[in-house]
Image (cartoon, rainbow, N blue to C red; front, side):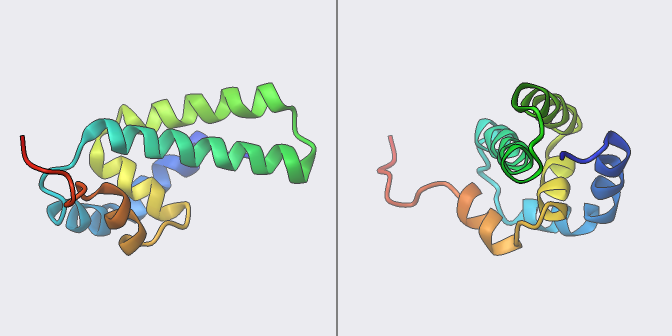
Length: 106
């Protein structure tokens, strides 16, 4: 099942320094990409709970949406901190968050 809100706040503090450092390496971060990454991570966690723990689908995904919203409302450092706490690596996050270099400039 998804993490309790107290655990989320703990993850935000635990990984704050690493998250701050990582964010300095993504100066052109698209906020909507980060928001969606957080929602996707929590949705994946909810789906795992449904599949492995026979948790209620709607209840699990509603909780995941509330948790993702809670994290997203705390800003970029909190978002990256929680993703790191959920098991994302710094390299994995950088790959997801750096703008696509193949896209031509407008």
